[in-house]
Amino acid sequence: MGRSTEKPRSEPDAVERDLIEKARGGNLFAFEEIVRRHERRVYAVAFRILRRHDAADDVAQEAFVRAWRNLADFDLERPFAPWICRIAANLAVNEVRSPRAREEGLPEGHAESPSVAPSPLEGVLDAEARSMLDTAVAALPLEQRAVFTLRVYEEQSYKEIADGLGISAGTVMSRLSRAREKLRVALMPYLGPTAARAGGGSGGAS
Amino acid sequence: MNGHVVEQLSAFLDGELPERERAAVAQHLEACSQCNAHLDELAAVDRLATSVPVEAPEGYFDSFASRVRDRVRKPRRRSFAAPMWVLAAAATLLLAVTAPLLLRRQLEVAWVEPPAAVTSAPALSLTPAPSAPPSDAQERLRALGYVQDKLESKRDDGRRAGRPAEKAPARTPASRPEPKDEAMNAPPPATTAVPAAPPPAAIVPAPTSQAKARSQVESDDDARTAGVEEREQRLERNSQPSAASGFATPPESAALETREVPKPALQKTAPSAAFRALLDRRAATIAEARGLREAWRAFAQGAPEAEADEARVRVIESGREAFRLSSERVDLDQLRRDASAYLKRADAHQAERIRALLRDLPR
Picture (cartoon, rainbow over the protein chains, first blue to last red):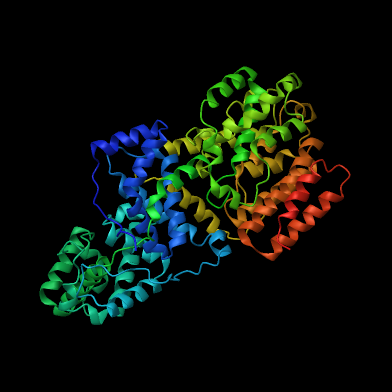
């Protein structure tokens, strides 16, 4: 398997800003560098929502294409990653039901083989819990997965998510609440004090 | 309900509750072990979820950036991308009709870029040929009489003109196939190309939507991304998922209104505004493709002959696109009917093109 996709909490840095400015001027090489910096994260967002490699690949690429075309609209004072991730999430939500997806027989909520692979980080989280999580997430409506992904993995605010997906903050709130509740019910056996320690990658919320 | 705050716990966890609600929830939590446990479980859901990384196939990212680059340079004709040859045709038209001198200069500049960039998109072979390569677009426009005679001697230049237009990185408004650019894609110098009092109905919608698009751009901030615009378009689509003919965008209404207005004088020098509007229109969804097909069909009925022939071909091509997007029998049947009807015409100037299109269809 390939390397794990990363989830850096990116801040606007000078190098990136420089790259974006060059890209804005039409410098495709600079843009390629931006792509390389964010490709894993964008792919991960798309994959978590779509749960299929081919669809995620398509959306991830397209997100960058859209970003390239809309660089002029990007606010240089802000980090690039959340912006491109929102574009990807929006595409994932809106394109998965596109005719093309149907043409290729892409059923919503269908998970391609093992979507996740064991990571050495979590010894506690056993295969069973992983499998339960996978099933539970797959059962979520696409819109809820998108909101859940942007909030839980990308740590975006409700307003950012709302703007990115074109819904109200109230809708973000309710979708997220419902998604978490469904996952809570499905994963109940794994949410006890023992499982709570499993979150090696979470950065220790609360 | 016995005062529990379960429904607010998710937002409480995220620190997204308004202060008053937050305080109320916090107060409740002090006394309610049940809600406290619930909150812990929700937090555990997040931790559990984030403990599982996403893995991409081995080597997947090795070529990712270069594939994005190819796609930027050469968008495939698909649900995401606009048909570049249409844009190329529009650009070519703009150049050929309005400014021969500019055309020549444009060629010199554009050809500095390595042509390899254009041909290196393997994805292109996967797409059901939107048929006309850009140079062909020039030919077709010439066939339609839109290229002035004095340009005839520059035929070779004209052939090449399509390629730079197609290759131009999607940075200029004229070549950005974003929905919001729909109006902007109408070549700005169009007004100079159609000096002879064009039908008002055809002209009015364009500046309006153009102004709208522009003000949208101006009000853009981080939040108003391409994605948002895409979504806005999509919301419209979703509200009428299969409204094939009910799809009314400014260009279409322009087409419908203006086809009743005779304008033979314009025909030889410039396409009608409605024709251009339809040329600029893109179809990313089934409904759009079907809508475009029907708009071309309607347009063909009252159009001058040169435009009518092209419009009939466009009926078939947008029908092909509708079928490609939908894979539905109904579209295939319609496509076959349209193609067959076209080929039976004595004035089918582009019959070979349609035959080629038919050959690529599934049996």
